[in-house]
Image 1 (tube, helix red, strand yellow):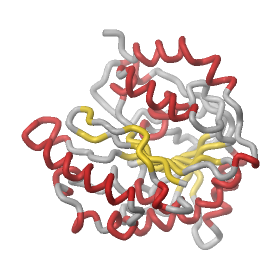
Image 2: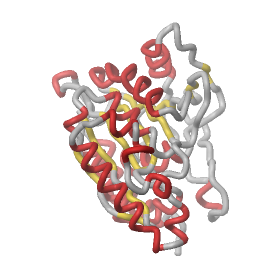
Image 3: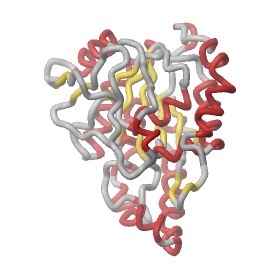
Image 4: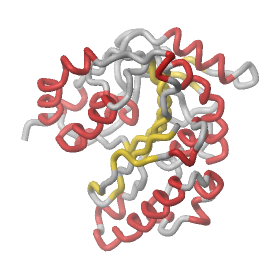
Length: 280
C-alpha cells in the first residue's frame, strides 16, 4: 500500500476545483460552526472519508480564515499556534510510516487572524502566542481534505480546560467571528475508544453513545451534552477521557441556534463513530 495514496489521488482530482472555490462574502451570512471527527494519519488512506470531507468543504463558500480547537492541545491560558506562512506542522503521533511525517500543509500567514481571535477573547483572557508550534493532526488532517489547496489562513487555539462548560464559554466568545467569514471548528471524535477498537464486543457502547449524541445534538440540548458523563449511555467506554468530546461543546457554543445542528458525516470506522456536524 502507498501511504497516503488516497490523499494523493484526491489532490490529483480536485486541486483545480479547490483553488477556484468561491470565497465567502458578507451577503452569504454567517458561516456555520463545525464539529469534525478528525481521524489519524490513516484517514489519508480512506478515500471515502477524504471525499466526504472535501464535499463538505465545497458545500460552503470558502472561508476567509479558519479557527480550529483540537482535542490534541490543552494549554492554559489559551494559546495560539504559529502564524507565519508555512509554519511547520506538529506531527503529534507515533508508529506510522515515515511519509506521514513529511506531508505538508503550508497555509498562508495568519497574523491578522490571530490578532482578531485574541481580540474577541478579551483583555481578561490573556492569550499566549506560540511562534513555532504548527497545527497538530487534529487540525491539519481534516483540513488537508476539506481545503486541499492550503490557501486559507488557519490558526489553532488551545483548550484552556477540559471542562465542558469552559469549552462552551470559549465557543460563545468565538461566535461573532462567523459573521466575518471565519469558520470555527471543534475537532475531536464523536466516540474515541481504543478499547472498542481492540474488542469488537464493546462496539455497542459506542453505538449507544453515538445514538444519544445524535438525538441530543438534534434537539439542541446543550445542557445534556455538557452533562454527558451522567446522561450518555456508554460514556465510560466511548470517552474514557474528555479530550476528544469537549470540542463538541466549543462548536455548540459558537452556534447561534444549537437546534439547527445536522450530521454531515455519519458512520463507524474502526468501531468508533466519526459523526461530524454543522450548526448555525
